[in-house]
Length: 228
Image (spheres, rainbow, N blue to C red):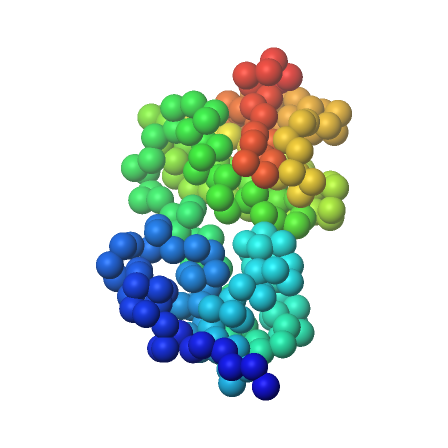
């Protein structure tokens, strides 16, 4: 049998928790952060070894962002408690990424809007169509999910988009959806849906300022590219 060094047996400057305390969370690797979330490993491997194996089993953080409880439980060394800890940490991260004080965040450009939405949406494995509701000062009132589609399409109806905008007294809106492929190039359907929603907004009196197509770390503004 081979002997594996436990985290407690490591020098202090190599232990994830001690490194976090001294150097800050930003200095830790993905595996080290995940090891802290897991808390412990098993007799066969340390929490750090387990964390590294989990990340290698999928596609790194992209796997964790979308993994179900069932998928996590299929990994050796991951029981219900550890799977729940991972799911809770990922969900908390998603909520923190999109959390904004109501009416305090000013949306001044497509880049600004994309930054607010990107971290939550870049790893989604289905198309999510969202609408960002803005007041008269272009402050974000809220971000609402309108539909969740399949691998390559989302179903959007003007009624659902503007129902929430009217309910929350939005002066204007920004449309956004992700492409699970990671490519932010808009499709013909994206452009057609946008034109339909722009026309509906004119009738209702709520301006559609832009439609953002989000990829993996990239985005396309239909407003900036002259497609709306």
